Image (cartoon, rainbow, N blue to C red; front, top):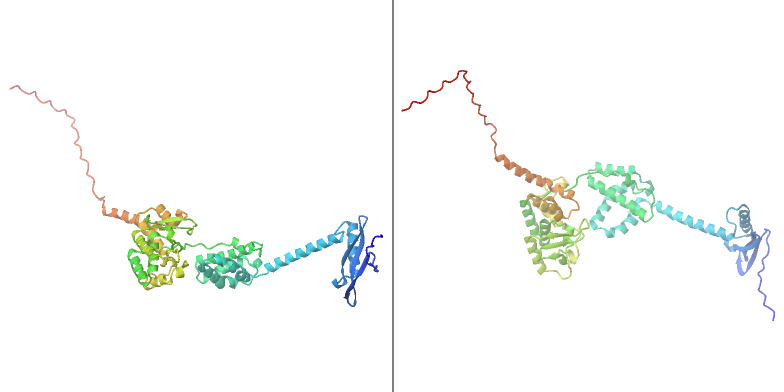
Length: 431
């Protein structure tokens, strides 16, 4: 039985050497059968035949001949692709590189404001407190956007940042606020690098941040404290309790808000404050009044939360109630005070706790441990209180008057010795 012959497609030649084509059996293009073009050429003595494409894909005999000539030329001179597959790989790589470069160009063409609002905020806000997010948005709107909002990252220079610093200074902004604004710009640049939206150097790295002592210095007297606590208790029992715990333990507001019943040991009189501001855990010791408050609260413990001082609906609070600031204003603790460092805020209670300990003669190292400071330099702000106590102690010596006006006695004058010899006394006569 004879073998079946493999059907052969007709490949008519064209007017160009090495270019052929075959026609589709049904598909038409421009009223004619769609043609598939192929080229023939030799590589290292071997005949190769490779397909290029259809007329409907914008191929024609002339274009095919041009491709063939390029391959033959490359083979002769040893440069460029020598086969159609190599040419296609190179073209594919070039296309991918073009796509990459276009994506990079599109990213780098984005303005600082667009990146801040569309990328930075949506991806970073969930990990920050509402207070921090509000602060960043306010600084951006008022100070950052007017200067660099419409600029591309690559166009932001040190001069622009200096302008922001100067504008804020001229409008009476504190050094702390200026530092905060520059820090926000730095964070945005760093995040842009992280998501590969920008790859150049950050101008913030070469800018000088303004220095200022923004540490709060105010602490309350006993009379001021009693007045404030009474006003807070009149307004809100939970707010009064929170304030008293801070005043008696030195705990920060967030540390109190995070406190859970599992962290309270009424027997030992201790509070465990987890993951504090410096990421460390420390123990706080209760005074009698704090222990009484917590014992009372334990009996009336809210069942739907494990927080000791829960906010609304049993969730953790993220800010001190505005009632605290109203109470401070109503009793006039900040009346006539313009320096922010001297204004009474909730954190003043923590400073008062430390200052009172110093006044009682407690050493700074122990106070450092109680406050959870990472270094003794942070605790040394209370040294002025200690100096006052020392000064008062030394002033007590003023009561010991030393009389330095007593005149010294004159030495007695010696009589000059006579040159004559004294006569010897006559011997005693016997009786």
